[in-house]
Length: 103
Image 1: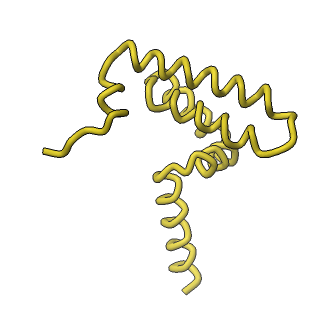
Image 2: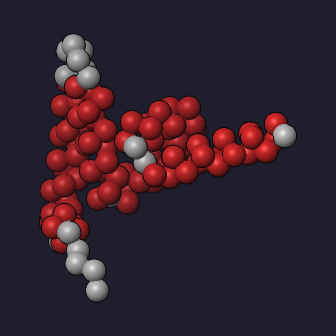
Image 3: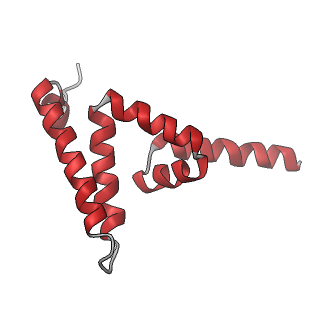
């Protein structure tokens, strides 16, 4: 049996999931606050907070999916910044379909 990582063991506790969700909210707020400052701070801090929220809250996942459905262009940008595997898989599939259509 594979050993679970420390982070996975932490997430099994309901209070810890709530704390990680709250930390994600705080990181997103901090990302917005440091956005006007020079440098890539917003592009590092905000996606980290968003990832924590999406991993620890079903509500946040539903809101994110609804946002991506309504605004696919912005949803794709968010997926690229967060380096989501599903987004990379969709881009590879689309490139393969384009290559097949060109032939």
